[in-house]
Image (cartoon, rainbow, N blue to C red; front, side, top):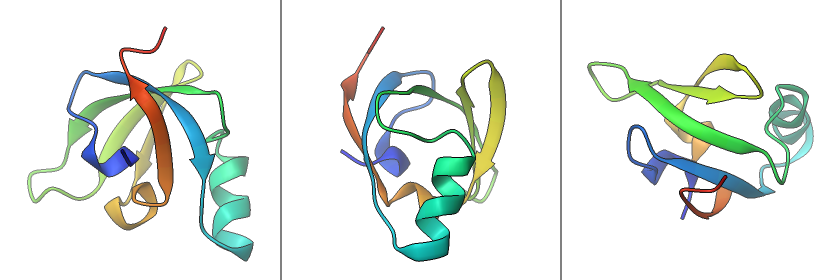
Amino acid sequence: MTLDKLPIGQQARIETVGGEGALRRRLLDMGLTPGTCVTIRKVAPMGDPIELHLRGYELTLRLEDAQKITLCGGDAQ
């Protein structure tokens, strides 16, 4: 499953971060690294962007970028 498909309020662990070059580096720099637990907090009224909670802070991410992040599964602790 990819990050854009995670339901609101559910937690999952990042398995891989896709993308190439500057995009992948930017995602990693924002803290979206393999092994990190993320939770979807909110979705904008038109569905894009989404707000995530990870590492003790909130992060807003476009769905296009969220599609490049693969998750291990739901309810990760």
